Length: 334
Image (cartoon, rainbow, N blue to C red; front, side, top):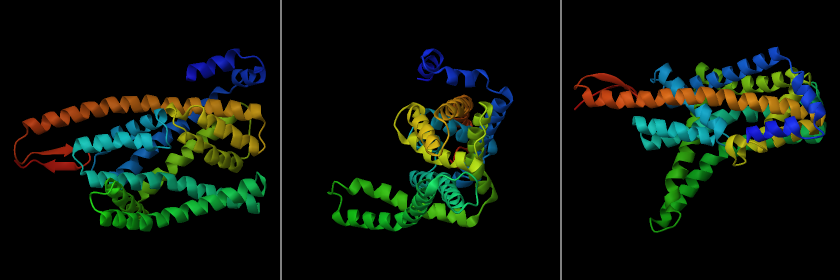
């Protein structure tokens, strides 16, 4: 799909201005954008470790976290695809299913929280004129209101899930909805876990969550500087947050949906279509390839780690201590 896009941009008539933008792109800004994206991927690791297992070694946390990022670049659904790989690795390592479910829901909410909070703050800042860029009431106030509504809905989700679970269990195992009970429990517990994690204000968690978002947004900004554009930073970040909703379209890597979402949002905020398209396409190359390459390498390392772990368990003696993925150091008792 990437190859098709490259061929279209290179050969299709009427895209001379777009080709000129790429031909004159500044290599230094491309390198800066790539560096920001690497930092975004690395920021995912401390956030993952803080939520799932603080006893886990940093090396193991890196392998799982970066492998998840690679999966997130290749699979759609706004990050859910990357979490599935983490679930597999943690379950393979022996973490209890209910703990995985609770922490996965919490982690999904926590990694989404900075985007929602940033959308609210940028919307308010642009609407009242504190931040440069403008955009009108529709493009500033409405996103802020939607973000505030999303925060309120998430806080109320725990109570709704609890009530739904109680109703399903009252209907008994014969009910066709009974199988939803574990998912409802995980949802309620996950919301509670996310709130508890935020209250603890673990510096590594906060740094990881903020860095994961902000460095990716800076890579997006650097891509526009590379093609000779310099839009206002608040405006381009606002368009980024809205346009990334295209990642929920179920195609590999969100290809097509994300590009249309980002370009459409940027045009609404006043950027010329050619400038928006050039910057978005360059950013998407960076966003897809860097996490994918790093993730594939990390996944290969993770597979070797799990194989060595199995071998260590099989040959160890009672009282030996080894590190179990998802559990941290464990003493064998058999």
